[in-house]
Amino acid sequence: MTPGSDPRHAAHESVEERIAELVGDAEEKLAAEIIAEHDLHPVAEEKPGDEEEPLPSMSEQIAEQLGGVRGLIESSVPVLAFVLLNVLLSIEALGLEKRQALLWAIIGSVGSALAIGGVRLARRQPVRHAVNGLFGIALGAWLAWRTGDAKDFYLPGILLTFGQAAVLLVSVAFRKPLIGYAWGIMANKGRQDWFGNGRLFRTFQWLTVLWAVSLAVRAGIQFVLYLMGQANAIGVVRILVSWPIYAATFAFTIWAIHRVTSAQRRDTPVA
Image (cartoon, rainbow, N blue to C red):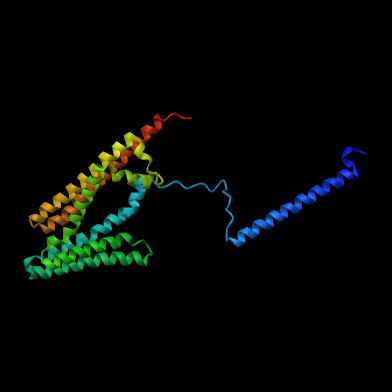
C-alpha cells in the first residue's frame, strides 16, 4: 500500500476538505447578509479593456464649449440680420421712419435667434449656445427699442467683453491666471498642478494678459464706433474683425502651451 492510499489519511483529508467547504459557505452567506442589510453593491472588477478614455484635446473641448464652427456662424446670424435690415430699411426711398426700420431690424434679429434655437430643439441638439445668444440679442434689442437708437443694440456685448478683459487682468494680478485653470480643466483631467511648474505658470500668466488685450481691442474698436454713433459699423466690426482676432489669439494660445509642454516632456528623463 502506497503512503497516499492509507484509508485513515484519506478520511482525514476528506474531513479537512469538508470543514473548509462549510467555512467558505458560511463566509459567503455572511457577506450576502451584510450586503443586503446595508444595501451595498459589490464593486465590479476592472477588466483589461476598461481603460479610462483619454480626454479630448484643449482645442477640441473649447471648440465644443463655443459650439464649434457652426456655433460661431449661428451667433453671427442675428447680428448680421440686424445690420442688413437696419441698413436696407433705413433707405429713404422706402419711406420708413427710423423707429420703424429699427423695429423690423429687431424683429429680424430676435426672430433669427429664435429660429436657430427652434431648429436645434427639433433636431434634439444642445441649445445652450442658442439660449445664451438669444439672451444677449434680446437685451440689446430692448435697449435699442427703449432709446430708439440702433447703436444701443451692441452695448451689452461691448460691456460684457470689457468685463471679461478686466476679470482676466485681475486673475493675473492675484497670480491665478484663468487661462491656466482653463487648461487644467480641459486638457489636464481637472488637475491644477501647473502651479508648481514655473515655466508653465509664467506661460499662463502672459497668455492671460494676451487674452485680456485681445478682448479689450475688440471691445475698444466697437466702443469708439458706439461713441461716434456708427451703429452699422459696429455690427460689421463684430462679424468681420472680432472673430479673426479671437481665432488668431486662440491658435497662438494652443501653440504656446503645446510648445512648453512638449519641451518639458522631452527634457524629462525616462525612468
